[in-house]
Amino acid sequence: MEKIAFLEKICFQIHIIQKRAEVANKRGTFGNQFMPELIIMQKNEISFEIHKENTKYTEPYIHIIHSDKIDVILSLESLSKLAGKVDIRTLKQLLNILNAKHEQLNKIYSELGEDESSIRARKVIENI
Image 1 (cartoon, rainbow, N blue to C red):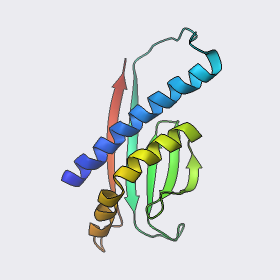
Image 2 (cartoon, rainbow, N blue to C red):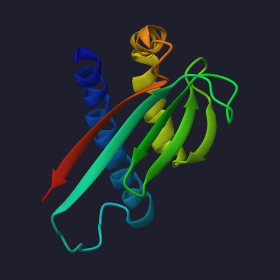
Image 3 (cartoon, rainbow, N blue to C red):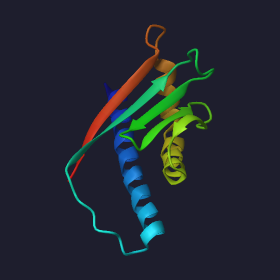
Image 4 (cartoon, rainbow, N blue to C red):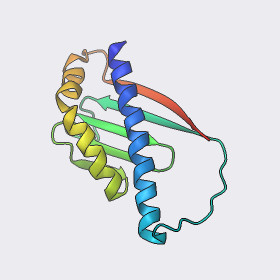
């Protein structure tokens, strides 16, 4: 259970990274004069999965999905992008977090048994 809690913390950090990247992108477009926004309550589900080797990729990987903003597959060994979509700002910040937790992520991967090929955590985050 502590593995799932650890991965859920990473999910929350991914959410924060995405929000920071959105603000930075708005500043790049509008400067400090942000356009008015319609604020609605939304739920963002973040999914973080660690996978062992399979037929599509030749190495273990991490699959991160956050709403329609992030859907990226990263190598667990090198943390290089294997596939998917994520903007460059978000990816850089994401890699900073994952690099700091790389040893723990590899430990989770190595503890996966023969009968389980992946471990997944989901977190629903509400914004107002």
